Amino acid sequence: MKMKVPSLLLALLFMSSPSLHAEVVAKAVEYRSGDQACESWHAYDDAVKGPRPSVLIVHQWTGLTDYEKMRGGMLAKLGYNVFALDIYGTGIRPQPPESAKMSGKFKEDRALFRERGTGVLELARSGAEVAGVVSFHGGLGTPTPEDAKNISCQTLILHGADDPFVPPAEVGAFKTGMKDAGKEYEFVAYPGAVHAFTQKMAGDDPSKGAAYQAEADAKSWEEMRGFFDKIFGKDL
Image 1: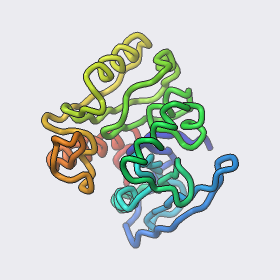
Image 2: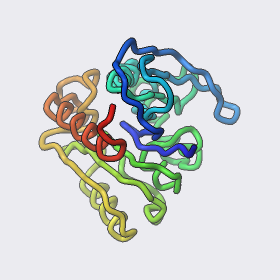
Image 3: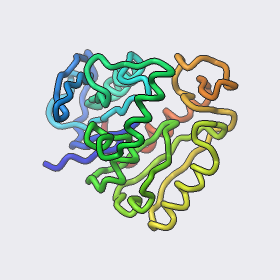
Image 4: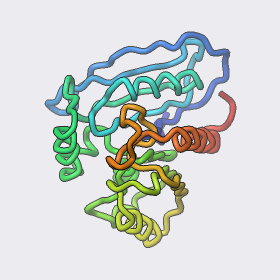
């Protein structure tokens, strides 16, 4: 069976199987990417038997944290099989400003970024066979905009309209690249929202460039659920 991938940050598609929800099972999973040991997080509803839709979560710039695990639990309760990957490696969970340096390393080496699990747009641009990708307050830039021609999936961008880390020029370049490649996509911008608008640990001061916004958080989650309903069906 072919695995197809969208996301929260991204998702792998299997056939769905409706059932009553029971206990969410969650545990760490160790794996290797080349020579690098990695530790991911797997969560699922143990009442669901057989194949079901799955979601692969790509973490934010401080690595795989309790935030991704919390979102994984929310998705598992909806009936998805959830795998939160680890781009940086086991035990590597940098805090600002070190996190900016670490994420910058992968932005500069897109091949390594794609090898470790990729950001959702990098996954799509790599030409992987995917069902769809969803980006929450993610970076939109790429050193190879022509790679947009490789995208074969449905794409949903959920963006903070006032995000200083993803400025209008980067948004414009993304849209131009998609248009030039003849690719359709959905783009939703939330007024007043900055970077990390779904993350409570980002604080509540938008002047810092990253801050939680409850309205954008709630609306973007519902946008994602509607997108998943469209590509997976509503049978969970």
